Length: 323
Image (cartoon, rainbow, N blue to C red; front, side, top):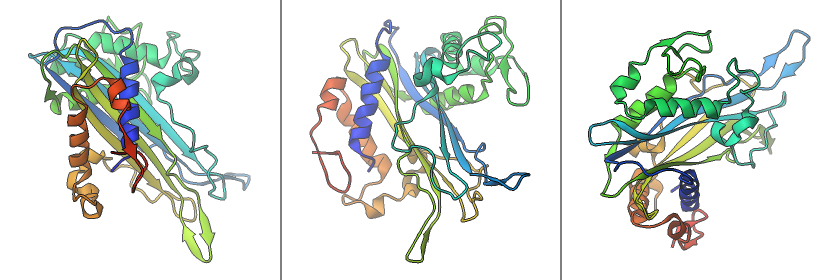
C-alpha cells in the first residue's frame, strides 16, 4: 500500500488550502477529477552538429476537487496542475534531482513564470482562480457549454465569454474535463460539510537512469507519483468526507533513449485501475490498493487534520504503515 504517511501529508496540505476560506452553503457531494498526459515526453535526439540531447519524460496531471450542492451546482472548486519533468543526459543518466519534492503550478506561484509573458500579465494561479470563480453557481452542463476559441496550436480552447476574456488566456479543456470527471465520480457527504480542500504530494524519487552492472542492464524509467485528496470539512475542521487517489505514471526508455511507452494511451490512477493494479496478490492482508485506501478514508472521517497527522505508524513492507 502507498505509504500512509503520504496520505497524511495530503491532509496537511488540504488543511492549509482551507486557510482563509469563507464558509459556503452545505456541500451535498464532493468529487475528485484528474486528467494525465505524457504526450510531451521526448526521445534522445541527435542534433545536426552530431551532439546529442538527452531524452525527457513530462507528466502533466490536471486535478480538480469540486463540491456540489443538492442540485448539482458547483459550490466550491479547486483546480491545479502537476507538470513534472524527468530529464536525462546523452548517456541516459538522470539530470533531474528526483529527491526534491515536486511542485504544482499553484505552489510555484509567480515562479511558474507565466505572468511575464502573458498578454494580460496574469500568472497561471491567478487565471485558474478566475476560472474557478466563473464555475461557481453553474452546473457541469453549463460549464461544458462555455464558448471557447483557438488562440494557437498550443491553446485550442481559450475562454471566449465576456466575463473571462480579459482574465483567462490559458486553454481550459482539460480543466473542464477534470471538473466533469469529479461530478461523474461525486459521492454524498454527511451533514455539516461547509468547506473543501485540495491536497497533493508529488514524488519523483522512484525514477531511475540507465545502468549495467555485472552484465545486468537496467533501462531508464521516469516515474511520477501524484497523490491527491479532496476533503470536505465541517465548521470545526473535522473531516466529513475524504477522497484519496494516486496517479502513478511511468515513462520507459530503451537503451538508445527511445520511448517505449505508448504516449497516446489513457493513463489511469490506482483507483481507476482497481483490481488491475495488482496489489492484492502481494498483500499480506489480501486487499487491493483501492480497498485499503477506502478503509483509510473511513478512519479519517470525524477527525481533524491534527488528529490525522498524529496517527501512530510503524515500518514494515513500507515506511509509515498505520499502527
